[in-house]
Image (cartoon, rainbow, N blue to C red; front, side, top):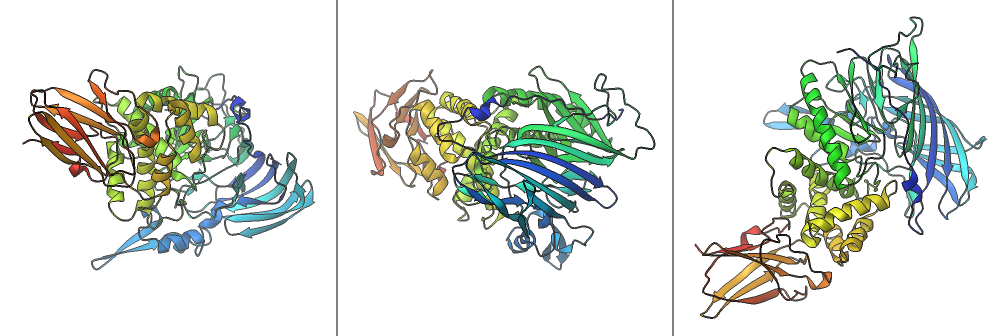
Length: 624
């Protein structure tokens, strides 16, 4: 395959940014950056101009920037956290066997001066006037030369220099698959200021939060590198690509040792790129207006998998467009790089080796983040379950859609993982900041699985049709914004007209669990009495399936009083009886059935399996 140079074209609608609810505001940034990369030392220097618009009602006297690369130094907060946590990320430690004991040591602690990461800022000015900028490891604290009044804009300029760390987590150089540069979190990035105040979280390996804006970035690098990432390439001919015919490579003059790649990225909240001398690049057009780019190493062992993954990626994006809303950019890139899989604006960096199924699975998840984080930009540091969980939800739906044999409940794995965590005694409330979990395992299951179950169980509460309408309305109302947990809850309420505040509170702010049981089934000549009990603190409406000895089935629905809602029958072909509601204050509930000469064979609470009951052994009653 001939190596070709990446061309990305400009175009996006930003109308969603201005379709804001009354009282809602968000800050805005316009970045201009020029950076030169020395590929021999992995050091880079750059200049940044940032126009910052204060759309809040506050007068700002200080601003904060993230300097993520400073985390990759011995003794950093990330290093200390890595050494202290009970189950350190396996990618960030070395493992040594000493007798029967496995010793795990921080890779960051062992970095040499030419291997560490750093990012330093100098010559900071506000509207041409010097301002005090204090570096506090991964945060730059700036005392402004003059306050930024509400509704006003100011221009910050600065110089920066950095060193790309050895690949340890997400960004870095020379990852285990040989990708030379994975440039994520590489520049001084303005911290988010919103209705809660500043979000200047130190970087200790978790998630991110950014300000919506536009990026104009020029990257100077040796001419034999191919780049891909965020944004639309503006100078395809200059860097060796003739966009009139993508198979024609333009000859770069021999005396010219470097090239400058110019990208523009409109209405994003981050900018990422990757570069390698041995990248292949495939362009895949679609019938829904988004061009897909696949950038991966020229490694014969992986080429077939990457080729076969391309039509699957098209199918997945088309499906996500259908169930959530149209992806608004004209391109998306899947790039081999990083240390696993991580979402970025208009692209992902993923490892490219391994099985075909694994490759498609990672693409399904990371591309799903293009909706839940890079369009619906929740604060994933404070609410990681909103982006990880919601992405996992559509990932499981998408992979099930692609599967030759479909499963009735694609969320069963997530529900099982959550139940195991809830019963382990190691669970934290979902309101826990992403950096504050005692163990990585608890964080992962809470964010990915319990976050996914929030939506799967919402389907149980309000029905599949209402849930799908909720996803679409949530996207339409909050794209290019910073939605909060209350926003998804209120959207579901507006769609269904159910009262759901109790659900958001119990599921995300407490460790309360769901546990219902069939307490007793008694029968005499005229009636059958079915007695249920609520054992856990979280209330739920109850779907009940009664199966009779003659093979017939009958459904019963017990509404939850505090919901003020009756769910549509999810199986119209089956008779369903709506019973009296069940109030939370009463832990017991009974109803009676006429025998009608029918003998009960089995009774099941929640036959769909969508309710995450933590003790399933008492959810069914069966006559043996």
